[in-house]
Image 1 (tube, rainbow, N blue to C red):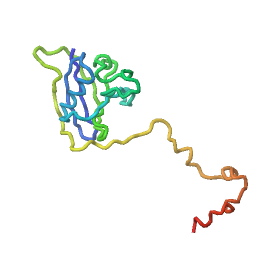
Image 2: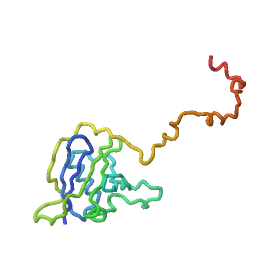
Image 3: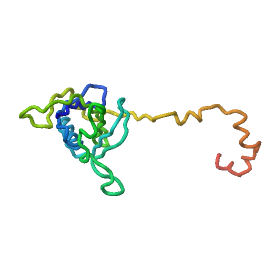
Amino acid sequence: MIYKFRAILDAEDDIFRDIAIQEEDTLEDLHNAIVNAFGFDGLEVASFYTCDDTWNQEEEIPMFDTGDVPGEQKTMSDYTLNQLLGEDQTKIIYVYDFINMWTFLVELAAVEEAEVGETYPSLLFTHGELPAIAPEKEFEAEGEDFYSEFEDDLDEDDLDAFGGDDSFEDYGFEENWN
């Protein structure tokens, strides 16, 4: 079977490439197809990230084993596309070049029979031109606002923590404030 993906640059403008690739190919093969489709030189490090249906990033799948114990961490070449993606899981995030953070939302659009005589992977369709520099990323924290607990006004209870001790001036630091 052939997997047809749409790789969309995470940017305001619509910039995407449609790629057909065999379901038994690896994430590394998909990485190479995306690099070629967008015209990158392929010299930068990249990773895929599993995600949920609303594109929330989950587990990293790197190009290289960067773990403390060699062979312990699985890499792109360890996963075939049909191991991670299918009807139940159609989305994955791809980040190329960790300095510039080219980020792509990659979605499985169709699963079809291979066409006789066609070679895969193949670039099916292109839309939009890649900008000269990567779009700037806005990083957001998950969960509650960490600083919200400090946004209250001082009250008498807060001042009681000093126990009525007004001896801050007795430490001899006045000369540092002149």
